Image 1 (cartoon, rainbow, N blue to C red):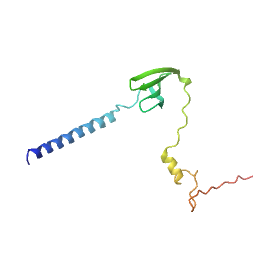
Image 2: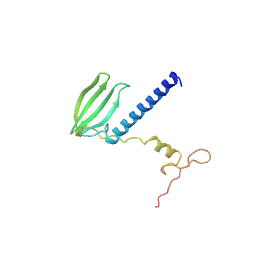
Image 3: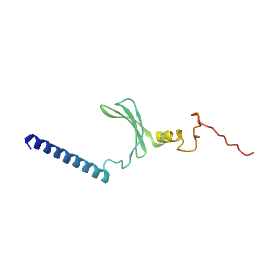
Length: 128
């Protein structure tokens, strides 16, 4: 093997070692819990304005701060009491649930399709 071949082998071995070291560091950080939310700070809500700007509601203790985030950094826009924050709206169903209902594998809300591709609707009559 010439110098070119030994250079390629050395480069490949170095690349494998660096990737292995990165994997080991990330795996151990995950096991220890580094990067997970903890403490009295919690994100209550967010509103993306555009690709680089957003407004966040950050709860710290009994206060909720309205924070604007942009390229230049973060700016406190206001402060709310904990009771002034509206209740979180109901989130839409995940796409997997909607798809499962649509093809008839999920809940019994959607009837299976009839032969011509339409959905058969059945009504249950209440006893009088």
